[in-house]
Amino acid sequence: MKPNMGTPDRIIRIAIAIFLLGYAYWQSSWLAFGFSIFTFYESWASWCAFYQLIGRNHCPLSKNNK
Image 1 (tube, rainbow, N blue to C red):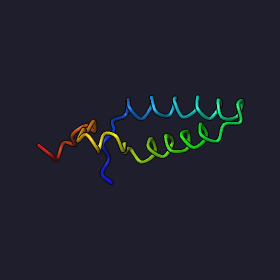
Image 2 (tube, rainbow, N blue to C red):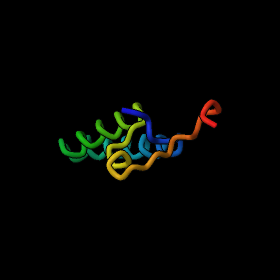
Image 3 (tube, one colour):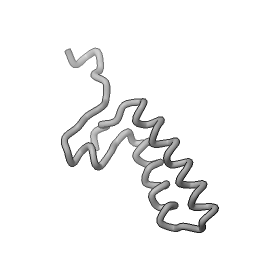
Image 4 (cartoon, rainbow, N blue to C red):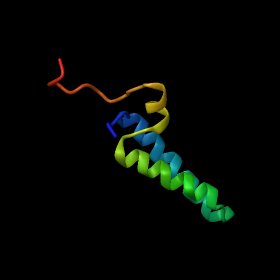
């Protein structure tokens, strides 16, 4: 899996994952807990399954790739 998310995407997904984790705790929702764990994984790996499906890449270009 090649990284396809930039830093702003990762920060937003971490915030969503924390919200889902809190929701899962208060509502005892296993589904929300599962989505929270998957969202944390996406943020940690800088990889989004949806972005890969549609061919998007939000990673900034490195200075070596001119």
